[in-house]
Length: 102
Image (cartoon, rainbow, N blue to C red; front, side, top):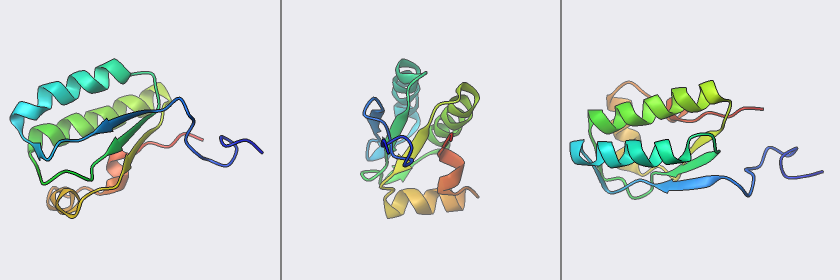
């Protein structure tokens, strides 16, 4: 049985490492990074995030909707405690930012 049949990420997926401070100045570069990877499966590592603002949350939510529309996978991995708490404060959960297509 191959790795795709087991539900594992393919070797062709890309990775985005989120920065520690995700404020308004990080929103445009993050948007550009997602745009460059559109059409590919992407893993988003949130382990370094210490602070996240509304603009970057909007970018992440938009990416999740876009990846779902495109039929691609977007997976948020290794969320830091601060990242998870910021999502909860905004009324969101990790599932809002991940897209798995079977």
